[in-house]
Image (cartoon, rainbow, N blue to C red; front, side, top):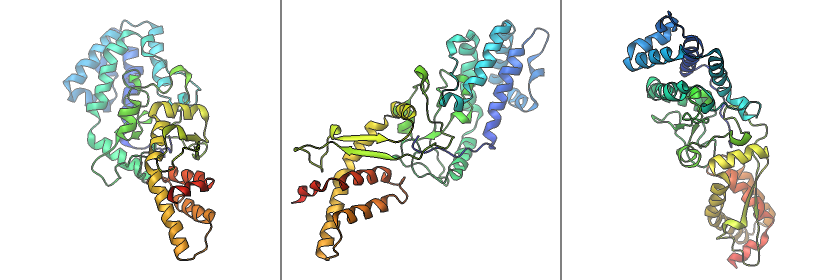
Length: 336
């Protein structure tokens, strides 16, 4: 994550995870002959259960299957629920998610489709939009996707919202399907086109947690590996090298999930011509008006301007690009 969200812990959407926890750990994992499923439900969840036939039918059928679970199988399901919902610990590498195929088949075959349907149908679009708007307000009204910093996002005043990304994919980790600590809003390119169903914790990976402040604010470095044939107006992919100051293992996961390096490299190559032409105009005006500013002063002024609101309009990439150009006065030869 280029930036993280400031958590919004008191919103009504979090009640659904409470419902799911009680349903799995206190109802299904306590299923016994002679006990009616409905009698174990909380009063709040019973309203959902009684109002929708598909919920009642599925909850009751799973309850009946769970009567046949052994104590060890019940314990494994409870453990998976709590471990797979502690997203922050998994991001830090302090715990490892429990895979679906290690649990009793009732989880994959019956619980999973129901929990995914809970997310899609029980939580209304209105509730999701309200949560999104308040989260954005609580996070300084981000204008661009906090994951990539490239794509504009809907404001809190909008009637629309960005995609809620299931950071732990709900297809593999259904117990976190309605956990909004597992649901950071991301732009569609980050969520659907880049990350898709990738598991951020496979092979022991660590990761940035979308709702925890970064240990270090990102400082991005851009190096241009130039040669006698380099044209600064049309840089190629191999000539642009992107570097990051943050935790290398987490950066690696971020890059792998969201194709960050490739996307940033492309962005730099797209804006380089415009940025250099703007600079050339500044140099021309400086000479025409006899302002007497040096190469370094003009570049440093431009960098200082970009460091203001640096997460707007790719300025977080434009400033390090200009810092690299600061050390390469030969680019001016392009205009001679």
